[in-house]
Length: 258
Length: 367
Image (cartoon, rainbow over all chains, first blue to last red; front, side, top):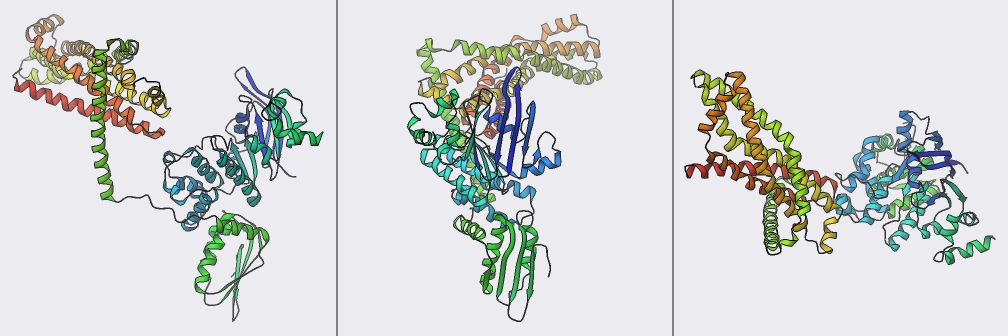
């Protein structure tokens, strides 16, 4: 399997506080990769480093074949068009309608004619399960779940090969969250994209995530499929997957393996 | 005709189309230009087997032109792959109807802004009603006065404004004296500069400058503070705990300005006259002694009192509008900016309008 993202020995410090001390992981093509860890373990920081919002103090990150530490301006701009990012709270532009939010990159970066562009926007809106009238609303007029969907539609606008999702199901109701999961899998299968997501959602972890990395103690303590990760005896893994509430859910996978 | 991504040719019976290579966001605009020119006089055979890579833009383009062609002639699609078919079906099943227009006509916009203004007036009346209710409630329950907040706002809006009010008043005093000096010197009436500066500063300019600076400084701050609290739902949280926002947020700010503004006006009067004094001695050679003794003769106490009376009124206008606009903020970040602007503009306009009203009243009363 081709490697889409490779993170090597990342070190990140905020002042005297060390967030990452030698974080390494690998994301393969076409997989849904989960990043897990307790709050404050630097999941979001790691993702921000992958999408060039922040620079690590040491180490190397390679995304779609580009080394982010050595990338030039033009290449970086090109790379930014090849991925889509879904922020935790949507981060839709509040002065644009939903349709304009989805359209903005197409308008800025491609020469696609207005009729085709409108159809693309409409198909993205339908793809994430929103109604047509939502397109003419402003973000402030939407509910939390609708904002997530609209933001996903915007992230998909440039037909990305790589999708970054920051807690995609947080703040959604259980049914909405499962539908969102289904949507992500469908999109991955149909469009052949690679998905990197930060998540705490046990349902997502057990059903849609192919491989995952667990961040704890400033490094990756376990990486692999759910069954592989469950082999780890790290206290955080024990705590997360084998506590009284989650034990039953994962027990059969664990037993089958061992 | 040859093209990198699409080729077409005709024989006697049919038109043949061959898609090739990449059909994606990059290439779609070019392909579209070619597809537009295809003659529709004969049945079309469209071969897509050589389209190696495609995304939804490419498939949508295909779909759009397929529909358009089908209206005019018959179309046969050959050589599509399973993946293309899947993408086509996905887009077929995932398409919303047209997105409704949001645009509004000119008349609709006028109507809307009239309604917004009327709504604002109604809301402001309601706000004043709440405010007076809270005020009278406080009169019967004086123990609930938020002394700490009130003092905090006196410090913030009053004491911390001393420097900027001092500088502004000093400069305005100087400007008045300079301008007046040139005119009065023509008549040899130099000493009347003291009357000009003294009376205009104390009656009009002192209160007005102070109110305008405070509207820009504190009125906007009140709107932004309360607006931010509205967005983070702090105000809703207060209400659920039984903390009346009018008592906790509005009254302390209103009281603070009503107390602080007259004091600031007093300060502004002194500094403004001092500015005039400095300018007169520089421009007209009037000594400090002369200036002060003349001031003592011409500046009656009533002028000072008439100026000071405006203070609490201006203070109430600024604080009430600042808080009112803060409560109007709805839950998006843009709205804070809009309402802060509205708050300052409204407050400054009303301060000037009330100043004019005071002038009329004073003149009618012969003061």
